[in-house]
Length: 288
Image 1 (tube, rainbow, N blue to C red):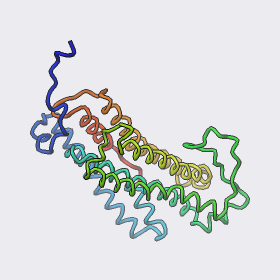
Image 2 (cartoon, rainbow, N blue to C red; image 1 turned 90 degrees about the horizontal axis):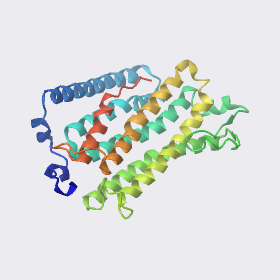
Image 3 (spheres, one colour; image 1 turned 90 degrees about the vertical axis):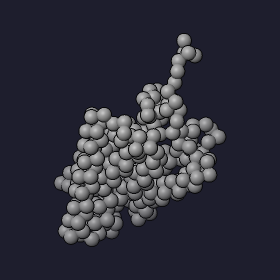
């Protein structure tokens, strides 16, 4: 009977500390953790070398955007590696990765504009063209929406739509940490009265709003930037989003619901966090 089952005490405890992880690794675990750590270290070293090359060779108006965008996978992979070794730090590593990706969303929009010469050149090239706003993730089904004239105001609104995510994500992260220190924030608390569910909901809405301007700009410039292979780069940008954000959210929800089994020394939720950090460690990004 279910009532007679004994539950391992570790299944209801906090995630294990780093030394417990190291002591309980078998041969396969040692090899797996070593390979993933090596991959994260190599990706970061390659990224540092890329930054040095970009700093010396790339025009100044594109340096910042390219460096930020190229750093998506190395930074997320490194944070995932740290969370893999130190499970109790996963909340902070996840927040760091999410904040970085929020900036990347804005920088990717800026980079597409810079590739056609910047704001002024973009407005001059626009001519009588219009922006198609019936695109994902907000309005892909609203085909009846009118096209919007390309003006300085519409360009500002597109940038603002993505920038708000970078700004508000940092604000929500700081707020979450403050509430966590006071015992009012717990990422596993899905109750309506908890702060976590409302902060997560707000971040989700801001994410959708921020991705919309990027999709609008991509649909408008994909032909012009075809020579720069913008389509595969945009696909990789979306892949990083899916693997680093959506996948993590789904796995964490399954863990909180108890769908993911407890395997000592990991509780169900700690194992879910571990799964989300194993997969992003395998990410690699195509340099812009």
